[in-house]
View 1 (tube, rainbow, N blue to C red):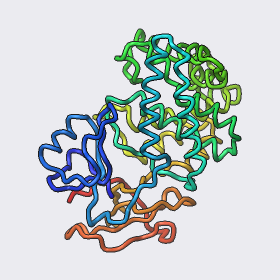
View 2 (view 1 turned 120 degrees about the vertical axis):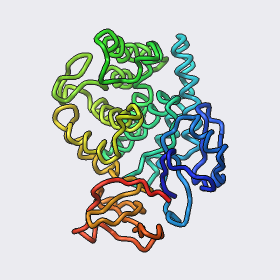
View 3 (view 1 turned 90 degrees about the vertical axis):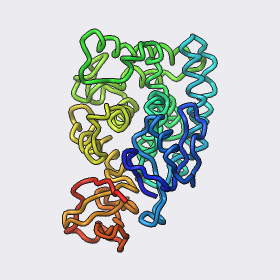
View 4 (view 1 turned 180 degrees about the vertical axis):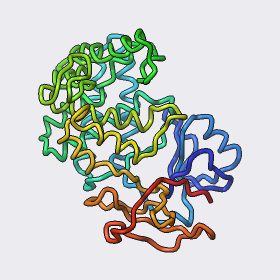
Length: 353
């Protein structure tokens, strides 16, 4: 499979992954042959890209860290729990606690140490899918820190509910923006305290999880909010969630006209070590998230183009590339960048066929 931006969709392309509405209903099944009508439907749900199967990408597969079934059931439980918590029914949050156990089990059981975390996501489902992705990334880091079951449970619960306070504030300000006016930013910052109080109100709740909601916007250098904590005075769980939260926000929450390439997002996160983020957590993040996800089109320094076919988990910036002849648009072989050290990726490129 390979990733294709929705502005490059063409009739008769074959879907490699199903597309869902924001309500979790299948809009188009895997294997669907695209028509003009189906392409219009994809545009209507406001996704940025989809995955297709063709001869160029035959045999290229994205290994999911958690199953599609778990993602969908967790999203539904999270939607229900957040809505009930918003209304003050905190005992109803038990369903999300149970779903967190399933997410933990799948992340722990997954043998891969580096992942390509890019899913088809509508902008309408920002809060819930963001929360799940932050949970999964946080667990991946916690797993590499050899956390025990209890630690993973506290981390996962705090990560998946880190933004629950946003259910209490105006929708127009729940997505962080660089151009907030002072009044909006003050309202936005309240979500951490609101989330802390909401999680504390859950029967038999985890104070560690509540603390994650309160402090996931603290910065390693003390410039964050709400308490201005710095370095190790910020709990390690919150230092992990801070990285996962920023990564997913940059990946899915930027306006379309300011979107960044995936490797640029990874570079930005890494550049904030010692300022926003704990450098030790950043080291683990770099080994966990590939800057060039499988199925991404790329340009090499010798001018050739290709598709990321497989990751080299010991060499994150040096995956295996399927080379595409640009004149004929035919796959002509593969090059392993961990072996061919003089060859580098210099940019992403949409493979337009």
